[in-house]
View (cartoon, rainbow, N blue to C red):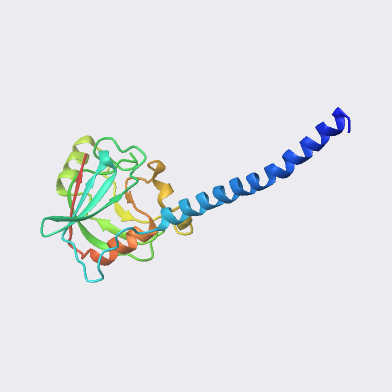
Length: 191
């Protein structure tokens, strides 16, 4: 066997040796993708079926929505907000999430988003501020899931703020929040 035959044989052997390594890498990559998808849709620590809350706190700067019962925080969700989240909502179309005290005043199971809890924005104070500036305050601020047909995005929707001023959760999270939130629940939205 001359040197060129030895080189060919070595290259052939390395391809054969690399095939199991390639398959292992491919398997681990597929496993990682599957785990990421499952994690993006899983509701960690689900609330008991009979749970009811009495307060919702949205902390805009932290992108968190926490729910309370009798003063005790019972769960926190990560959120996406309006596309321009800094500062309070000042007028219709500014893509800001309002700040202040509101309430859940209705719900829409037929929303363009997966379930929607309506927040009582604008308040009298919001209307007064907008009128003083000669603008409309805006309306239809909701806590909702993902756009219908986009639930596959799961937690990935939180990578950037994308709503027109609403607070967005995953579909699994809004289903849980919808179940435990009675109409009239206090909603506080902080900067």
